Image (cartoon, rainbow, N blue to C red; front, side, top):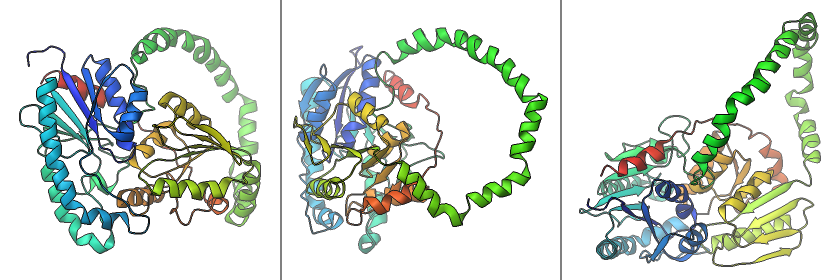
Length: 431
């Protein structure tokens, strides 16, 4: 290519905010590596990304799918009957993309779940964690044919980025780890807008962590290690170990915290946990977003806890208090990150982007899948079976009952953050 600075068009799907939010770390990394980024979006994703990136060029990219939703008819059935509309939308997307490529001299296109953004003349990347699209039991016979169609379209792109770990621990389950992957697939690890990805990250590391590492080691590890060794190998230490940690006391410990006493333990634990900070994060499609908001407000309007609710409406600028709940229409990522970290419990949808955010910040959460969205229903069940997050259906949500069950979901994962995304974007310079 002639230009040294490559132009990258990044375009998320307009179904809620999840696709746009997981594009945030990709955009930051592209900017860090001096790519010229142009964001193509519409509706809520456009408003959301404009608030995240003030100095980036934007293009309005219409949503050609125009999926309609219903309060009564399951989403999977509505979606099934709108497949012809989706296929037509893919065709229209592809034509519109050609016009943008010619007009703006685009070198690379990154599409988050927009199926029509492949092109033979430039390098294109598709982002998804759904190689296998889960179907409800009454349409299960279509799952394998749709998998082949999905794989066929994805392979029209030069590259597929899967936002998950290739090996355990992985979090998308069957969606990207059951069937044969497309030949252009690459796992790029967890994508979250709350991970460190801004320009000053490397500078900060160099100025603080590297230079001060030796000083920290000298002041803490070297000096304190002698004190630790002195105590650990002393006679007092041996007496302490014998008195408190040998087998005789193990039986007493088991007796005190046996299954018989677990209800008493739960009562003490949750009595002390009152007046804690609970954060509700709403997102996704209407009318289900509003229906969930109403259910949660009804559950918490008399609560003594500190409740904050982010409504997932970036096109509005509202902040108000109703009952005992603080309502925020939208928060930028940095403020939202602080609010999540300061909260003791998160309640949100089980969308994959929300799950990745919770994993990065290591927060306890209740997941409520969108009714009829088989992907979210599968993910909530999968993560619940792994004891990572407690989940409950929208219609069965009852905070007083659910709170007692959250106690058993304490599994903490340690997964190393590798520079997979950074290396993948570096490779784009070689195209």
